[in-house]
Structures are given as C-alpha cells and as structure tokens.
Image 1 (cartoon, helix red, strand yellow):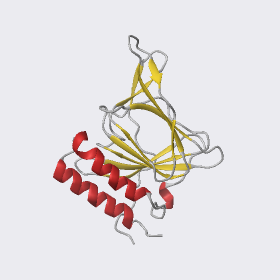
Image 2 (cartoon, rainbow, N blue to C red):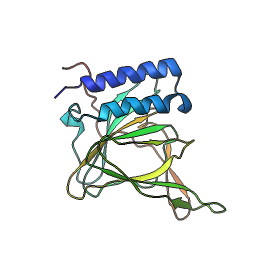
Image 3 (cartoon, rainbow, N blue to C red):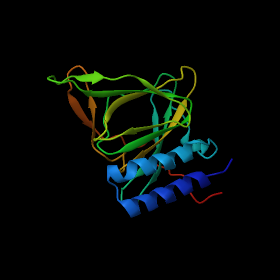
Image 4 (tube, rainbow, N blue to C red):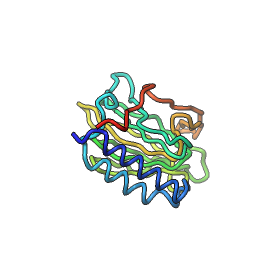
Length: 194
C-alpha cells in the first residue's frame, strides 16, 4: 500500500490548479479530470476508516476540504442496493470510481413541463470518471451497481459539498426540496503519514 501519499499528491496538485487557474468550471474541469483519473487508477491509498459502509444508507466521508472552500474531496461508500434520490450539486463536480461500480442516471427538465426527464443510465467502473456541473448537466441519481458488495467512488467538488445548500427533486413534478448533506464522520485522514 502506498499509504496516503497518493491523496496528498492529489490535494497538492488540485491546490496548485485552483491557485493558478481559479475555480471556474471552464478552467478547472479538464485538468482536474486528469488528476482524478491518476488518483483512482490505483486502489492502494484510501484509509480503511474512510471505506466503511453503513447498512442503512450510503456514507459520505470528507477526505479534504481546501481552507478557502475552493474544492473538497470525498469518498462515497455505497452498500449493496444503496443510492441517492434525484439531486443537484450547484457546483462543478467529478466522480472517479475506485472500487466496485456505480449506476448514474442524468436528468433534465422536460421542454414545456416542470417534470424531469431521465437520460440513459451509465455505469462507472474502476478508473472511470464522470463530470457534473450547472453548465454540462447537474442533476442525477446514483446507485451502487453491485448487488452483493460495497462500491466506493471518490468525488471532487468546486466547494465544500457538505455545507452547500443543494436540492433533491421529485422527477414527476420537478418539485425541489433544499438539503445540506453534511458528512458521515467528524474525522479527516492524516495526509502526512506514510
């Protein structure tokens, strides 16, 4: 196991990226995509404490949040059969698959109606990356594609996602309800251990 070094290098590279280019979606998505792809190509760095599933609902572990809230890094741990409601993010985001697999269904507002229309379901496998944002499509629902074991994805967002006011949607009516997700644990990994 490489220890936390891979995550530490990723956080350093992301910090440099937002420092040099700012946090605007157009400037950040492509290079951040490449950085996340490098991080999730190997599954030897995520500390065990941030990979624990819960039998009742998915877990959202904060791995790092930039002190200026320019980005956050989160591990999502999905138990068998677990998923999200239809929701948005309101900031750019990247999802990189580390273990297992996820299904993602994008939604968009139907023309001439308030209802949301589901797009084609995509499956994300280890090493795969998906992007979301207000510009390219920000509403989706996600679920564990594995029926018998947990799946883990690493998410990077253009803000502190656990504190951002977002929305869950009723796809039939388009009705939105505010929520703030928070995090599943008050602990953060020590990026400076070996």
